[in-house]
Length: 208
Image (cartoon, rainbow, N blue to C red; front, side, top):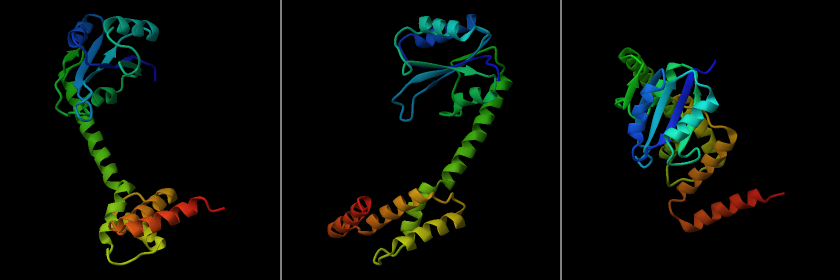
């Protein structure tokens, strides 16, 4: 689909919020929010801008508007195809995030974008619940820690648990890794058993 504008990510710097506000006089529409990062350690702004300006000219404008840094870490610019998902992404960190700029976009459209974001969040959470990496803990909790188990037994239990719980079954490599980690956890801090297990794993790595 042909680009109708740009998605911009730019670091939070002194004076940048005012500069973002000034963009409303230059473009057909501007929507912007502030994000903090995963642990609020990386404050930055996300903007969705609709414009007919060509990419090279737009990039030059952005560099002039936000001059206090260089490189993709400071600012990144990607094409915007007009899809509502680009605007809904503005709310992926905080569904109730307040817009710092809303120009050329109706309140109804913003509400719709928030709704799309909520649906995406549900889908992501459902995918996480099905993620195979959770199987390791699920299987470990089923095992009697006083007993020993073969790798085949643990691997079978990994697949059985996945199928019965609706989680994604692990790929062969991940199944082997999870089996090895479960075996290590079953050592329960016994250094002799831990070293014996790891020596066996190392031997298999260099076996010809």
